[in-house]
Image (cartoon, rainbow, N blue to C red; front, side):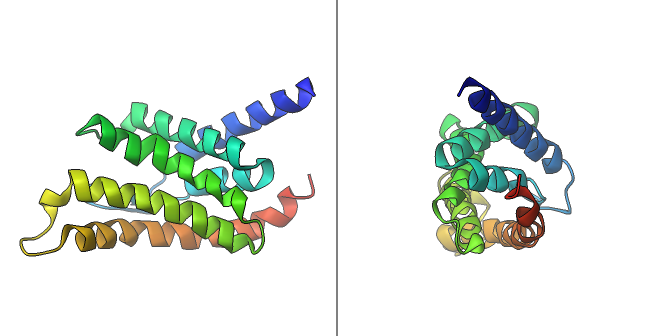
Length: 166
């Protein structure tokens, strides 16, 4: 039992650190934050393998590491929304294992909601005059979260058959 717990902790730490490393390999970077990266994949895969609690924990740790090393903070609540809560939300992928894309969409969708709320409350001033802040935040955050989801689905479908046999 103790060995399984140690394996879980090590695997979670590896998923969080791998997510952090992948966050620096930006395929596309938005002007006011947010990027198309592969950072979601390790957390999503870990959540699918190890469950909700472990996935949320590893995601939150990845978010905290990203906050400490390269975070942008305008308010403590914004920091929580954009980092530990957003990345922790990826762990919700564990709730839907079939179809596989359903869990990936759920986790990514909840991360998107965290960024959407942060954008509305803390970055609404960037919206062009006359633009609804909800629409602005949804379009802005969707412009990188949707490609992140597509990449995560493709890579997870390639990697998952190999991982589930371990």
